[in-house]
Image (cartoon, rainbow, N blue to C red; front, top):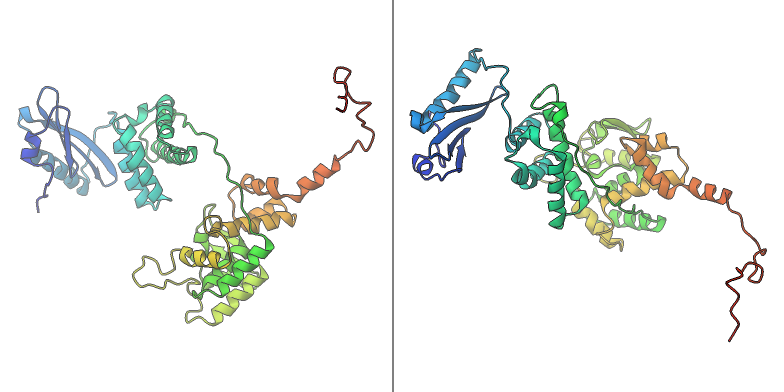
Length: 400
């Protein structure tokens, strides 16, 4: 069955102006400066990128020959006869690299792909797309950064875009991909971000939040808040849990996927008891703790608890803009710091990737800081007087 073309039609090719291109189904028709049309193919065949110039219209080359060339590549690949020339450098444009990067990452379950695709397709490719991947410089990226900041975007947002670019570059230079050399990776300019203040809940606010969750119409809302306040777990980690992952005897929950990798999550006796009570009422005692309430969802568990949490926050008399599910995690970790738990212990419970991330909480809330500052506290008592400690040229003013 022949491929149906909607854009790369003969009339459309004839209408191309100098420098214009049409691309469809891996075939590109490009009108060159001399008026001739050049046909190229750029396709993936069994994991190998094939980028070839097929020929020019003046030499009798048409779109149909480009189609046949692609089919020939695929036929030879199926028969094990695909013999691509070696030693020839096929330079990718940033736009080509970005699309292939997205394709490969999705095939291997790459993380945070929604944001990566948005960064690349909406911001980076429109700006850098035509440039060679191995020729992008630090200076060029600084220009990009300056332009984005000038558009009113925050440094944090541009840093996220630069992080996506950095990951693409590192994968491109990896031994598995070999698109560019390690020395072709430019210095990625990142700016220091203003760290947001860590907000936590007071003891009274925690109690109000839990009471509001118990009173909510969602029968799982209270359990979600119990998880947040008693285990310091992230929102996504909580809703993906199952009963068969719980070790009730040792008060542990197995987390298979998380930012820092799999881990055994300690939980409090109160949460352990709450989970036992809930499990006894379940139809599936080994299934999802937060099962999906709809049949048309992609997952068997709930994707999130945002809607219920907003209701709870309002009922507790708190501000939904300030009190998000993540504030429960901040609060729980801060409680560990105030209890003078050591950093490795806190990291074990919080699931942070590095001790440095835990230190941020310690630097702000650690009681050892107050203890330390008290250790060097010394007063002058009443030894300083106005009369004895006024400089000669700063004589006391006379009372008027």
